[in-house]
Image 1: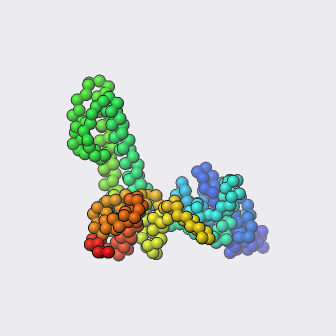
Image 2: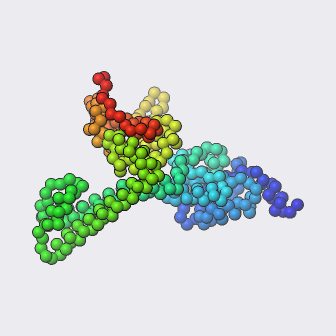
Image 3: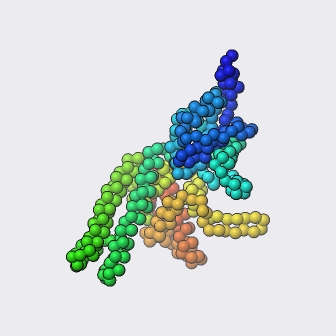
Length: 359
């Protein structure tokens, strides 16, 4: 029997657990065989080379990998799975960390910890969206947050410049209606650098607005093609939910079936309290910090609109606001709105408005 065959026979069917501390330039990998850490391996971020290394040194084994979700997204997971690893991705906060590990944090320690936790069966993978869904979600986040911020910057530059030179502007909404833009275009200015500066900023704003409108049109079509136009119609039938909000809901939740109960989606959105209970002592610390920040923000924002449109939600808000602050009452409404979203999506039907109960 050759040496290679003997080595393969020794590792045949054996499980190896790899904790990977991912970074842009290199991966630090801790290799664990279940009972002990075998070694550290630092190499370029290349799943194929990592698999070749494992096949050369531990041939015939079953290879399991884990890394924390972060800047590199899920491409590494997909490539690790493709080349033959059994890969999972975990939330960083779900990995147990001792005070000593926080005080002496290194890539090697993180890799070793991940490998050991994986070997002990203590890690659970987060949801991995399809590649297309992930790219549509990135497109939606760009359209909602980045584009809005850029538009606001150009508005603020223009307003600050006019204020600096004492130009009085008429009252207008923050969205800059068409008549206000026409007023800016017809504004009487000198023929020098002041006029040229204002014209430049206004033209930049208008061009960016046109590009943003076209970008959002493409985003809406992508979502309709992927999720179904009927589902978008069902979601927009809800109070306070426009098509932009519906796109955020679709791209952040992606698949409603991954939430077995409403409590799961409620926890994912972060509409749950953070508390500390020990013995007879209990302390509520407000909303949990663990949440999908895009989802919770849009739910609370939409709830302020929903209470004005839905009599039942308004009645509920009125009952709550008599006992607590408006900011606390709207959280209760956000939970109710999320429950309606969950039902409409789950049952694939439009929302039906109801009159508030007399109690």
